[in-house]
Image (cartoon, rainbow, N blue to C red):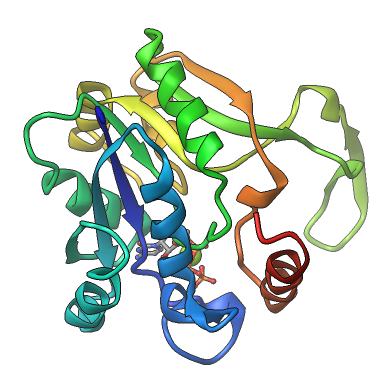
Length: 224
Ligand code: CTP
Ligand code: MG
């Protein structure tokens, strides 16, 4: 394999409600992070996995993942961006393709990992999985009045894994000023061209209790 996958998993999961950090919350009896790492490790291109864990859970995460896949666990940061930067710093020499995948996207299909990696291998600097926006989108004022309807035909909802040529991601993180919610946003600011590949509904992010219930249902009815 020529790919390192960074897995930011240090978030609290506030929107999921009270409980353990989100990556450790259970889905079909196993932590979200275990599902995500097991699926990532199934992708043939993957050489290295680095997880950024909640600071209080680093040792627990090491023990959880030891039987699942060979991985490195580092201390996460106070923002997703800081967690990714910490994981990136722990990638050994070797892999020249780096993917970043949210632990919260626990049902990631291994073929999507391969598709993003293949896009970088083919010579692109950055690649992201996207889906069309299905709902009508409106711009609304702070007091709830519609200002206009956005043309959604040019809009895409963005998922992970996001893939990068290693040097491109390292340069973007090294010069990052403000915190963004994804890594492609950082490389865009560097003027790097980001290529879209088709995403997957299974790469949905588990954010709210509804999403966790949906993921439970998907695993129970369509285990792959
Ligand atoms: N993440 C991280 N470090 C942080 C914040 C987030 O590694 N300081 C990770 C999360 O663990 C998650 C991914 O980034 O896998 C996407 O973030 P999100 O879905 O927002 O997760 P949380 O921040 O945990 O959830 P919430 O915002 O509801 O608290
Ligand atoms: Mg968050």
